[in-house]
Length: 245
Ligand SMILES: Nc1ncnc2c1ncn2[C@@H]1O[C@H](COP(=O)(O)OP(=O)(O)O)[C@@H](O)[C@H]1O
Ligand SMILES: O=c1ccn([C@@H]2O[C@H](COP(=O)(O)OP(=O)(O)O)[C@@H](O)[C@H]2O)c(=O)[nH]1
Ligand SMILES: [Mg+2]
Image (cartoon, rainbow, N blue to C red; front, side, top):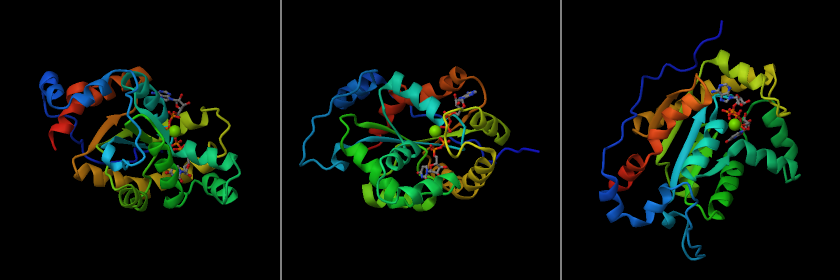
């Protein structure tokens, strides 16, 4: 019998209501960020990444919960830069980088690649991007990942999405994914679900307690789910974040 992997209580989904105009007057630079166009940031080698005050979203959920699918829609609608940690690692393996075979084995077994590798890849992508709004998909997977990111990048996410899906549905989706991935088979999926439950749920719980989590019921059509995601990124919702400072 399959079961739902989380019993987290419903978490906040409301954002402080703030008028868009009021917000835009004080924070003009961010107004363009809410269009579907990619905002242009002036690159300055002397400006540290942290000083750019990026908007960082972590996108979490078990394997097959629809993280990548919804990220694509968020990119199309809100102009974020999408960074899939798993995709960055797969690219690194394909480029025969140092330790590629250990990384491949780790992924085949559904285990987690050392934090310093993943954080370095994410950091490179963020620093070289002209975009200042990031969706970091499938990371952090462990408390150790989370702490490494905070220490090395010096930033916390502004918001954390959690796609909550039953194990039965996740397994069905992963086995039908058909992307030729070495880890999309029943044995590895079972291990990934276990790793998700043991290592990722504590991260989700941490952000829930910090008031940053937006939990989304991930069962339904892709469009139905996106309608639950959309308000989180609507202009007022994001602007209110900048009012908090
Ligand atoms: N709401 C949905 N209903 C049915 N299938 C979905 C839904 N969202 C995504 N999928 C499909 O499920 C598979 C896993 O989705 P994906 O976005 O890759 O998940 P994740 O990145 O969380 O592993 C893909 O084949 C995708 O097309
Ligand atoms: O921060 C990360 C992200 C991914 N992975 C590895 O890469 C695999 C695939 O991750 P991805 O996010 O692509 O899988 P998804 O959840 O989207 O199916 C995971 O099972 C892990 O083995 C990892 O070690 N660290
Ligand atoms: Mg994915």
